[in-house]
Length: 118
Image 1: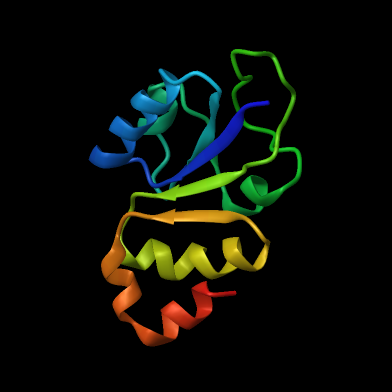
Image 2: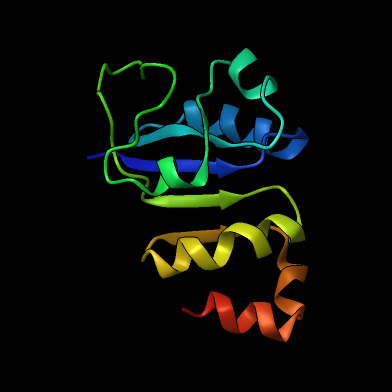
């Protein structure tokens, strides 16, 4: 069973993370939660909104290479900055999903840090 990952953001860092994830065995890139449509889709990465990504059977705009109709996201990887952590992080954690934060300075905010503890 593969680890299903969704990225938060699709800028310079996230696009490189996507390339690395796509090359890994046992890991599936479900898609990326983006504010600006286009760059992810141009790279063949499904563009998601948070509600879709939290669904138990993510229905991405593009059909995954393995032909699966949908699969839950196991791990959200944030690569979009502190505002994205504040916007998406508490809802992801409240939904019982794992969140990897790359913008660790988000944890300097005591209120956000409490919200992320679940």
